Length: 348
Image (tube, rainbow, N blue to C red):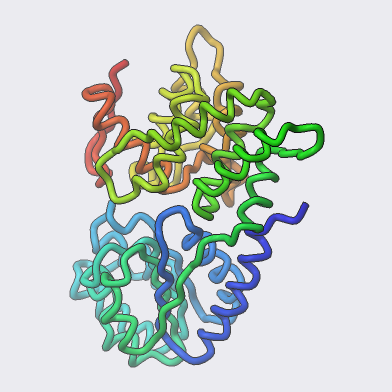
């Protein structure tokens, strides 16, 4: 069965590349969990070879402006480190006068953030350079993009594609199932609202569950939801089911640790799987099976870095949900600084 997200991604990538032939700024807009970052990374990998230098910047909110600019300049091949913001902008301007660069800023929250990193006048003076911005809020980048670019909206999956993606992750088979089972299957898929992350996580949560009661309970939990007072309640109500109903207490604790402590907003290079297992080890028995379950449930991703190490990674929506759960429902058990400026601690 072909993954519809792969097909959709290829189609979107082709359309974006057409846009990039005509503009120097592109705004990729869509709600959380819909695939903006995935698309931006696909663009980066596909076209970076056509530029003299390139840089993909994540975790904008959690780092200082000077730190971000130093990262960009370093990846653009600038050996000289910026002393301050004025110096950084001068180095950026000198660089763009000579080189054609690709810069992608992921998950931008406000327009000033972009202007502080790369002022419009600097980008406009460059020869063939491109700025791509992903955001949930078009208003945050509207003025910047309109100056010399275009907007690209990332749409939800259509009904057929949503069912296909859910079926892949749930291993759904229609044979020998009652009409009631088929009905609840369709209702759950519809409740995921065409969001790839919701479909993957909910599908993985229900994989192997052959009793109608398990599916009914999952649907009721989705409908009931536990409002977290955030802008992402629509997707969190779905993702939350897998946390509440699918994990043991130890697995929930590990999920929250990854969300609060092990993300790149605290560890810039990411937390290695090996190191995390050492931290969690109790009585000389590392919780390997528990971590594998989190991966199996699509709640955690293990990526291989350039050094060949296995690094724990979590979708930003799942990380945000985990941090909100820790703050509201596990008060005092996890204390961290999202700016990465102070040490982390945990109390069980």
